[in-house]
Length: 134
Image (cartoon, rainbow, N blue to C red; front, top):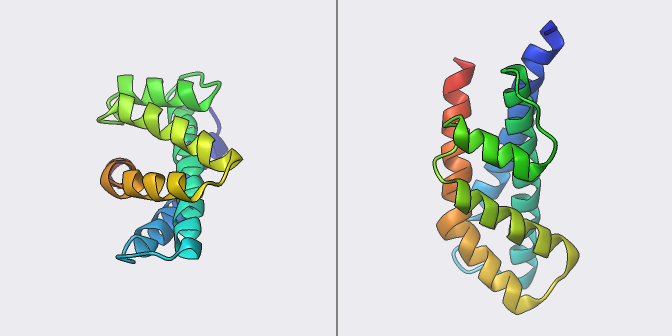
C-alpha cells in the first residue's frame, strides 16, 4: 500500500462532505418548488455517488476488493461502517431510478425518502468517517 492509497479515501471524504453539506442545506427548504426538488435530488445523487466511492476507497485501503456500488455497500455493512445495509441498497435503487427518468410524482416521493431515510443514512456515514479521520 502506498501513501497515495492511504490518503485517497480521505480526499474522497472531503469531496463527499461538500456534497453532503449541500444536500443538508437544501433539505432545510420546508416546501421545495419543482426546481428546488430537482436540486435536492441532484445533491442526493452526488452525495450518494461520492459515499459509495468513499466506502470503496476506505475498504480498499483496509485490503478489501470492491467492484461495484452494491459490493461497496455489502462490504461496508459487513465491516460495520454502515448501520443499515438494506436501506443503502434501497437508496442505490432509488438513485438509479432518479438518474434515468424525471417524473414529478416520483420526485416528490424520492425527496420524502431522502429526508426521512437516506439523509440520516448519509449522516451516519459522515459521522463514522469523520471519526476515522481523527
